[in-house]
Image 1 (cartoon, helix red, strand yellow):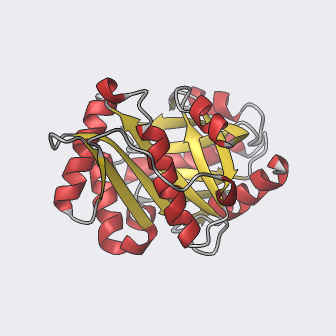
Image 2: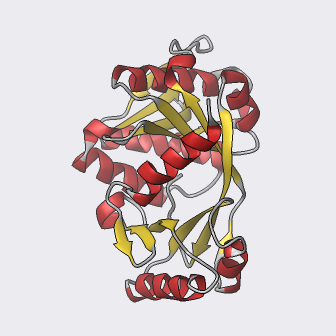
Length: 258
């Protein structure tokens, strides 16, 4: 895979022309009304335009009474954009690795531990199951995630697939999402966190295989992941390649895309 070509295609299809995105000068942003979360997904900035653009976006979301996320990628210009965001009051989150794989090269048959089954989320009860898995895996409050997924299931259920791995006792042990983008070559893998007592048993890999099968059935060419340090080695062994790095910079109280 030519990673530079794939990265350029990713920038053009999923950032510059993001579904639900709106252009604000040299910036493309999404809002919860248009894209499920509040954030900046792309910018074409220079050293002379960056500070004004940052101020414009902080003013816009502040006027709405919201925090937001600026998805910074290491190849974005200017080179010191991250430092400028921090100086403007943004808080950087943990860095993530942008990884991409060709769907045709990935396994599509999920292999689960004994007693664990996969459930597809289609209603509010399923969303609650997903949120319970998220709490067990990450130990954080997933309220913003729940609101976003409910909105997606209500407005465009054909574009999102949510899977929950459930143990024999009925407890959710992991959850993950596939988000498709019609008219592009990509679908995104999100979530995938597993409860501590169930890690190392292949559940994360099984969820990737299950979502790959769905993507293949819809003709998706590439799967994209913003990988944590924990998931990056697993994804690398499966065939995902590093395309770049990204850091979520948050301003105020923001619910991001993860």
